[in-house]
Length: 392
Ligand code: NAD
Ligand code: MG
Image (cartoon, rainbow, N blue to C red; front, side):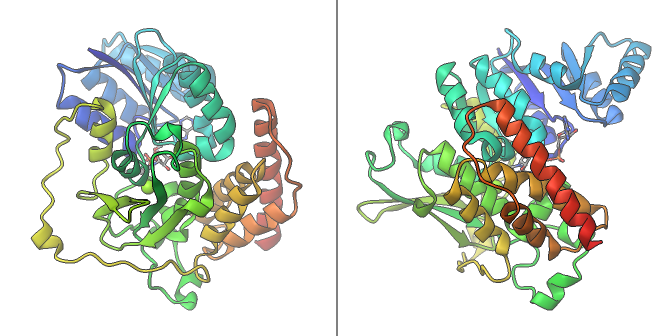
């Protein structure tokens, strides 16, 4: 039996993970589940999966969950806060950790899993954007293993040979092609973009996701974060990664080799496929996803992304090009701007403006410690908040 911790189990990825796990009770034992404030969601998951531990990041929510579990006669132990998240990411009886907390909040728990040498099923791309260098070092030092959950990176992983960590050049790879749906505003005019509401931004044509990543998809910052994520996961540089708009979201990404071969991974747009792949790797298990009906899909379209209408993609390429603390600043400013947009305090087209202003207002510095990364994150959030307040 594989012992599993699901960080962020009440979210979109967390729920899909438990859906796959529930299909294989003979293979997986849920050791720990975690959430931020969703007491009812975590309570129901505890009733169903009977984990040894449940963690609520929010302390008042932890008290409430503890009370409700006791009343219900369920003996799951409730831990709380960042310490609780780090504890359940590194328990001895845990083999695999699904890292599916959203944002930089997921960095420390994912890092704890790396330091405990776990197999990390990494959905939380922001952890790599914020601290990719340090994260990959800890993974190597402690013999941990990352399996990408992000559908594009999971596709690339499936199209690469097993010895890709020797270097993409060594294994004959010319470039990585990350596909992007283009989100709900792929063909919107600049005028239409100016009046986008949070509800419109969160209505993605192909994927059901949490609100933050839905907005990131609409601005295309999601693809920018994914370019940075791919650089770390596949030991490569941004000039070897191209973004291809592909509105059907059937090809999840591609790898081009020196001989001109292009390998692609296809499937229905359902996160249970990459989740099942990573859970069982190198084996294959049923994910609950139906067969791809190519006659129904009928055609696959491709376009170049429009940097004019989607400046976030350019900002992300610039940040990874500058390196050092720039990606951490980009991520912090983006998290603040997206939160302000979702709260109705900021316009959609102001999101890239806030990020650009924040980055140009701060010095980029080398990052050599976790403390330094966390300080950059804190400073960039303060700066971004000031920039947001100046606009409202
Ligand atoms: P979500 O908002 O649906 O869920 C987030 C989860 O994290 C919830 O369980 C929430 O309780 C928990 N959480 C939120 N803030 C927290 C905090 N401060 N401390 C502790 N826990 C906290 O998000 P999601 O769509 O499931 O995305 C999760 C991660 O996976 C993100 O990094 C996202 O970019 C990535 N991802 C998601 C998808 C998708 O299809 N949803 C696809 C690829 C990658
Ligand atoms: Mg993705």
